Image (cartoon, rainbow, N blue to C red):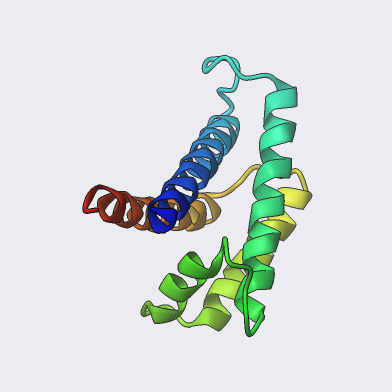
Amino acid sequence: MNELGAISGKVQREVELLRELNSALLTLEASALDRISDFGFSSDDVAKSRGFLLDFVKRLCSALKQESPPLHLQPIVDHLKSGMKPIKDWIEDLESLAGLIQSNNKLTDDSLAILEDILSLLDTQFTDDLQRLYAR
């Protein structure tokens, strides 16, 4: 039963992270298209989304450089390390993305694609965890 509780707690944290990342990405995509008001976002929403994504990107980049990444980032780090794209390329992409976010410039299609790739990996991880939860 403890294992079921642990998986359930992990799934809940993943849901919250995915929700926040998706919301922040949508806000910055609207900003990149100069359509924040069309989507009902404010400049404050854009600033908060930039801050949230910057923090996440920096934590993920740092975790990729560590021998033992934090437990909450371990699954995505393992997934990135097992992929076809070299880790040094991920680190370079994340560092470049962090610089772009910090500069307050609009995100490019390439930088948005990096975020979308990471979200896709997190979504796959979440689906796997959810299947493990319901398989019990």
